[in-house]
Image (cartoon, rainbow, N blue to C red; front, top):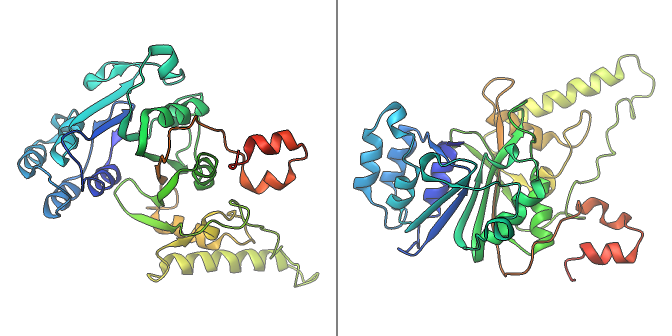
Length: 317
């Protein structure tokens, strides 16, 4: 997996307040690919008690010589303990199968201040176990960072991921949402304002604006509405003032004609060319040490007909 510029920036931003006892575990061994510009940016900013000399040592390395420098980067930022878990021992990782419950299969019950899933989970078949393992690995009050494929990434892994997934996982488990954003691998982000949950917690109703609904049977009306909607997306993607999304906007479908123009425009801003890849970033804080709970996609919660099933998915349980 690639420890890319967006990962380098996000981890550095979390470094303030670290101590020699601060610990991090990563799902998947990581190949260090943070760019020179991001390394230089990290060195310029006072992200906690970072070791500028160690960061400079990494910056001095070129090409493949940097590949195994992820642990050195974390330690330069102030983390005292670093662990990676993968199916092999590359870069010193612990060999364990992430499809398995790490606590029950391997007796690995250590908890960490930061747990990362940076482009690993999409290659693991059992997604429920990925989330369960992250939950179990995180200490109470600890952070869980997901940086996962969202738009395009065709045939990159088994799965692509959506922002609503992390909102509902957080809701089910009482996590705090520290950050949700869309990003590219180079470190550019479109943040989501998560100050309040959307009605129903997930995807907003998308019934308005059907093609031709206001234009009757005018020939070509559907094509006209579609063209107008695509133009709106393009215009919004060019507007510097529209650099963030509300929670409602990030939960909307991208369908034309439809309501998802803000989300579509944010994706266009991040894409380099028509087929540029876009990531979803979610930073969640575990507040307690309760067992992991499966989420139900929130927009369907009101459709549950059986009280015992509703109780199973109710956060008040």
